[in-house]
Image 1: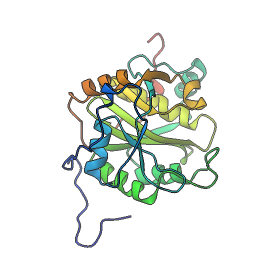
Image 2: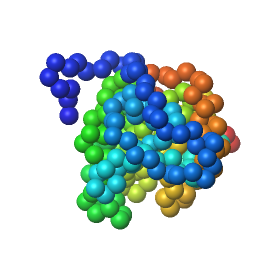
Image 3: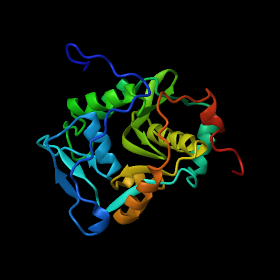
Length: 251
């Protein structure tokens, strides 16, 4: 979707005015609710929600819910290490990995790929796609593209605030496609001093990749520290052979 009549596309490197939703500070409610409801949905509200530890997750009726689970699935870019088999695969150079080259294709693939237990439904509604594409044009949302022989076979997207990256969704059309995407973005974040990758909620795939549980209060404290650091706006880039060198021997 493009901008409406009379609108202009946002410039790279511009944050919208941030509106902090009236959600409670859940550090004061360690066992409080995990889901809240709100009718607002624009880029300012979206960023404000992330800054408070909430992310959007519509239900099966496409009603918008805002989630802040009691336990968060996270990765630490500074300590993450993929399996030796995956490192060998990366070093062989059979994958072509890029950043921010095909954001729209990545988010559309994430929205359209079948998910276990969801049938043909997707939580990435057209409205959410439009908002994340807006954030991409502002240099806040980013994508990882994984190709083999020119064909997109894996990827992920999310947004960056301070020194935290909020991973929204990923996909794999070929074995290891999403593993490569996650491993490379974590190396990229590591090399740029990021402190945390928020994978939001548990699933078996994330656990198998080394995701760790973090209690909500701990996550919100870490989030506050991450947000004290500068947000790097604009498109992300990396060297063509970055994936091959991301995890050097002995590192």
